[in-house]
Length: 594
Image 1 (tube, rainbow, N blue to C red):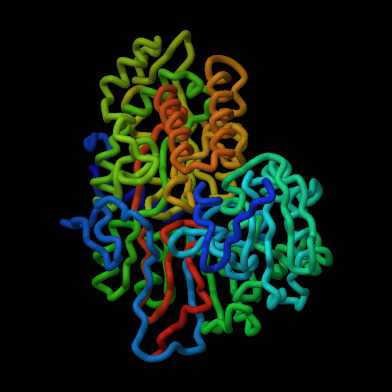
Image 2: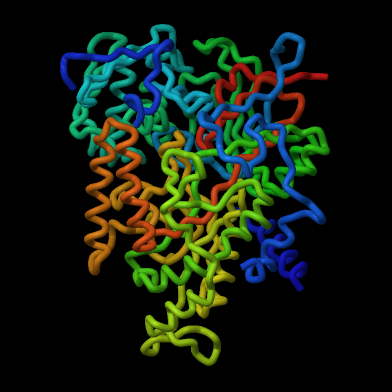
């Protein structure tokens, strides 16, 4: 019976479409680090049993980080494919599998993982997150920040031009950053720039001064190193307007050639790249949402790199001679609740759902040991990990008692009812396949809550539509979700009620004790954003972790290890231990051609 259920689930997923005068100076010899010196198995077996191959056990990968069940190393390090003994060669096309279409080819409209891994190769950021997850000078070859953290002075490279020969200079940076708060353009960073940035001023041709209106210690990491910090050609943007994303122009190692929706994004070598002529002739990102198809294409040699390797694939890929890089990454996952709508406004319902899911079984049967149960949203040994924060146990009987005590009585059809109202939750899902299948995780949650008498409706949306509904919160009550940080001491979930990627609709709550909770969370985030001491920020985050636990603002689930498949002919590919913008210095990657 279990095999039949799993077979149907696999078939279903496969068919889904998708400061003061005193200053500090930072350069390549002295980096800024983290923004100013830091900133029951029985229930699930029908679903997860077939995630494991017959007799398959967790298999160690070739990654330097060791088996996934061990604590993360003190300093995350990038993994690099072995270089051949001969000199690097020019030529060839590197093919990368991506699980989704990019939501845009304009970096200022990109805040998601999959889009960054598809199209950032055409651009350069002002500041880069390197293979050790430290901040590194990039288009800004050095910068200064005042002691109060309110003013940044960027000193720009003088040897950079955009793909259309537009000069890269201070005026270009001013155009890009002021574009972020422009109401008509309405980028995905508009709220951040309006909240934090007071002015962007040109000091001279290659010097820019950014003045903040509110201290934000993560400003360089969050807003200068990710999408909003990637520079686009002012000439192209002004000429093309809203059509810029159709013909994007950056400064990066690869230039836009063509994009075919649901098929591929093709980029060709930028021979004049300031960082050195790339070895590859071209870079092709193939859009392959079906995880199993990615694995087949990787084995066949039609794809060189896949970021969507799952634990069940490791042994098979290694037997085919494919390197599987295994790294713990700053990623957390959980059950998101809509706190502003539906039955999940009620604490008893959230507590019951939290107790209904067997996390240990997920790690054992889905991750095959390549991961761990989440305690407070942080892997063991990492800065935000605290032993005194409890893990929600698997206790469906206690979940039933909580619902009974709340007046939700089991009706004749097994669904709980109170005052004539059926207890029903809407589960939002997507076909996204990364280290785990989002669809499978939502089905595991669905079966778990139905087992304790909660009726469900599950809807599966394409990833972009899923993200839109996740933010809007119009229909859903429950969903599996994950977020990715670009530093180990930032791993967690965005509980900030006013954040772009808030995970629980807390900012929309208008009644009850959660209004007070939301205000308390806002205040803690304000303090964290303005606290220069890394340990004090960790302590402040612990206050949020305790509020999460007390009010079940979300329910933590698991951390999975990042498994990346790379074919043997790929040389000098550096994979950062982070989901966003994963490949480092891809212009130095080359292909061994036989």
